[in-house]
Image 1: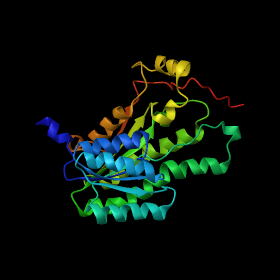
Image 2 (image 1 turned 90 degrees about the horizontal axis):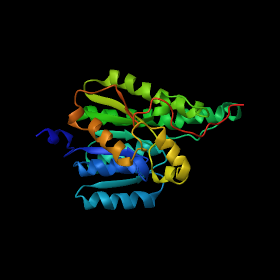
Image 3 (image 1 turned 180 degrees about the horizontal axis):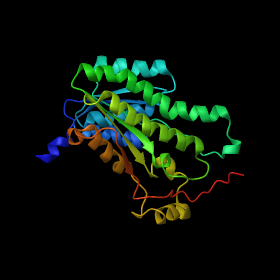
Amino acid sequence: MILDLFKLDGRVAIVTGAGKGIGRGIAKAYAEAGADVAVAARTESDLESLAEEIRSLGRRALPIPTDVLETDQLDALVERTAKELGRIDVVVNNAGGTAPTPLLQQSDEAFEAAFRFNVGTARHLSKQAIPHMLDGDGGAIVNISSGLGHLVDSGFTAYGTAKAALSHLTRLMACEFAPRVRVNALAVGATLTDALGLFVKGELKEQMEAMTPMGRLGSTEDIAAAALYLASPAAGWVTGKVFEVDGGTVDSNWPLKIPGY
């Protein structure tokens, strides 16, 4: 059956930024597809509630409070997952983000921090996990990038440039580790997570939907479904690709134009 290719039975996945939003949706999708999941985020209570949901699906869950900016905590995340769940097959580098800031108001430190949070953390976690994949049956890495890594809008010089770097890091790692480890990314468009929903509502939400060809903002399920495909045997002939999951946008659909000067 073709649907069997989307199963993750017997696989172990690590998902960062799993406490809320896209990361939480991906972790639940992987568990529904048969994977055991190590979930990482800074807020322990979010992880514990997610772990309960995963266990209710009959899968093992390993909640590990993690600040991805601390490399020793990323190292511990990999070590505990391998020890307690027995293997590592999939890594989702979801943790990231940078608030929009006009370039002329942006410090050098803030620009460099955007790279560390969005690119450096993904690089480090992948580097630590790949040897475990190579010792086993191979694996898959899914990086959560952004549409602003290739689209343009004011105020996003740090975030957009960092996500563009993450997208190309994806291609370079895919080249280096094929065919044993597949590495792909999702260039995610505006997705209506709980956090985004706090200020994207009413007229602003209507404006963004009108600027999106598909007529709505993304859902966490939209992103989770694509992340499941890239992690599963269904994408066994796919590596080094950046999938645009963005409602068909070819221009930024953020109506909040931040003046540069």
